[in-house]
Image (cartoon, rainbow, N blue to C red; front, top):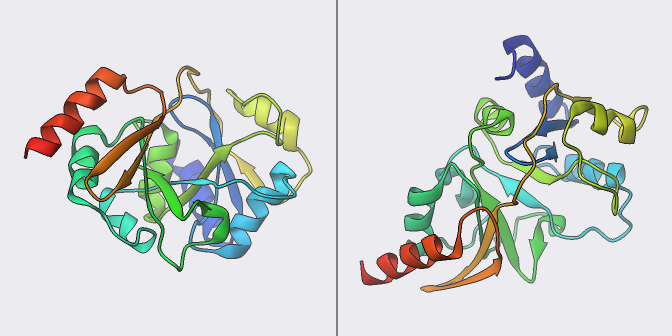
Amino acid sequence: MTETNELERAIDHLKSGGVVAVAHETYFTLCADARRASAIDAVFALKEREEPRACAVLLPSPESWSCFAREVPPVAQRLATQFWPGPLTIALPASDDAHGALKFRGRIAVRVPGPSPALELARAFGGPLTATSANPSGAPSSRTDDDVRAYFTGRGSLLVLRGQADGGMPSTVVEIDGPAVRIVRAGAVPQSVLDAAIDASAAA
């Protein structure tokens, strides 16, 4: 659990356009207001990516995906109900208003993270946050706040929350187009469990 005063400081930092490093279920992630272009740009400046790859988005709740997704098919809603909060990332057709760095092939990847300081932060902030690994591009992922500081001390408006992540498998990623669901990255939700949920959703 994140201490109350530390969490409040992180919320103020996000509201001012800053970047916060916080642990989710597996590693530390760089979070910034995903509705604010300058905050998203600050994340990629920290990672030193000349051509940003798409950045996923952490949501405080499924309802908040409406500001990023052009449409939310019923199968996406049912999967979110079953697996969120948790390690399932759902890629949906992106709205025109979503920042370009959040899109890949016209889609945006979103999830409500499982129990973790990142979930606490997203819920306390009450809005969507960027989710990209807290390390320079090409470097190993950070599992502790000390790892993050070793990478980024003295660079940019970064606030690092104390903690340690457990490591392990990343979230499973699915791409949804209408009723069709395609697994694009294997992860913490086993394929057999996901396949059963998809089959049940198709039969509903």
